[in-house]
Amino acid sequence: MRRDARPAAPGIRDLLGLALALLCPVGLRAQADYDVHQFTTELVWRGDQALTLCNGLFVSHRTPEQVRAHELTSLLYGNRGGLRPWEPMPFDQVSIDYDGRTVAVGIGAPPTAPVMRAAYREGLGCVIMGPDQDFRDVADLPELGLPPLGDDAESIPWPDGDLVRRAPLPAGVDADALQAAGEWLFDREAHGGYEGQVTTGVLVLHRGRIVYERYAPGFDRTTRTRTWSTAKSIAAVVIGVGAGKGLVELDAPLPVAWLPARRDPATDVRAGITLRHVLNMSSGLYPVDNDWQPVRGSHLVYFGGWDGSAVPRDRGLLYEPGTVWDYENLDILLGLLALKVGVGDDRRFLEFPHTELFRRIGMRSTVPGVDRYGNYIMSSQVYTNARDLGRLGLLLLGRGRWNGEQVLPESWVDFLRTPAPATAGTGRQYGGGWWLPPDDRTDVPQDAFASSGSQGNYTIVVPSYQLVVVRRGMDWEERGPDLRMDRWDVLARILHAFPGGEGGRKFEGRTP
Picture 1 (cartoon, rainbow, N blue to C red):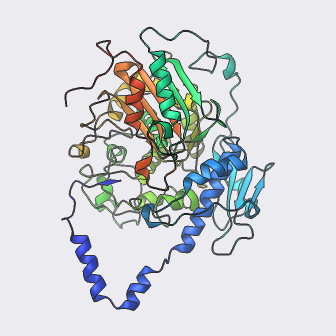
Picture 2: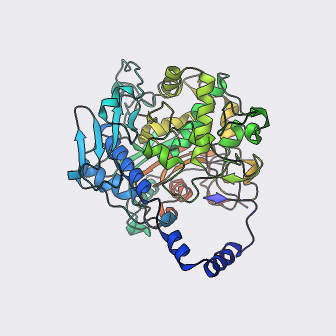
Picture 3: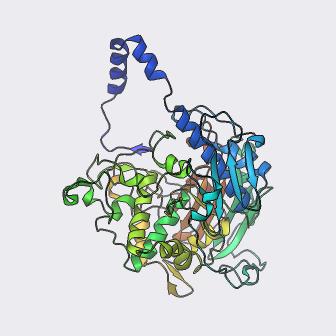
């Protein structure tokens, strides 16, 4: 997903490859073709399955068969990044402890990688354990320990709770067009999509009201599934709450100790990287995740048990911060690390997203994941449901206010939806942790902004329409991420049902 403002000259890489092929001895070329990382890849794949199955069972409350049919099958790597497909482990090589809420993957499998384990922790979801750990180490994993809320969401009116009273659609909302949009979203093969576009849930809010809600078989409004990179947008809001409390500063250097450490940290060229840079995805740091190899970067943090605070700091600077846009999982982890430093207490940091955001706006079902070191992995590992994402959208639609209280600074909402300077030459498609309509997208309002996660997981906010759209998906990506449903296509289809914003007319495009 790299978008480099200074691309190399066309054909240079191909010419170099041809020259090396002609000059290198055959033996060296054969050695280069050997997959020296196959064992690490197997370790990460086992860890991926362990964490996915554990969360699917104990956070989503789905059956092993459901998780295998949906979550695990949709994880197949295919040809993306040059990886071959990986079949999920057969269940006779998986151990599930329902009482202890743990999963182990690789039992009795060939010893090409360790058995990988994941264990559930209340309020934090499942935690991937290190390759050298077993379940005797579960007690050492992070623990949240917050008391449960003492009320019942089913008896509290929406949006603070889940009590929704039936009422006619608001005037001007086209019921037939809304129903047609729902059919377009759920029956993709009949509407020009491909079978791998799997919509699991859709929620549409208009002026705060639920006007459309539908789920696929096997899912309902309580089902929590992985948000993928929508987690980055959630993290950007959590960090913004911290900024409102003075715990982090948008334009101050990140308060992190870079690795490897220099004798004089003041001379480290990375010292000028700010929170704005990492949330704009323009830190200038080496982009380890661009080729999606599972043997380094975020994959080792997500599924290999590596330290989520160390890996993001151990990268060199390639570009001047703020000049090159490059979508990177580890940059969001740097922003969360800055918040952790600002909070200054490990337990309070674990509580922070819950006490300062989720519980304040009714996001009772949202479970942000952590690594075994107590670092939030909110670049991808957040489980939640459509209604909680709808609440987050309503918070932003209300410019950070909830029930008359300023939960998130208004200035931070503006930052989230302001194009990153480094995107000026590529369509101004990204803000501060949230995606923006590219300049050439004329069929959706330009004031819209959206979270965007793999497998088509979107939360779209449209202030001019007072609209929030949530699409949950499990789109297969074995043929490449470009075949997932497009977020702006989703919005364009939904807009057919709604009167326009300021003018009161339906949106008919705009002059570029």
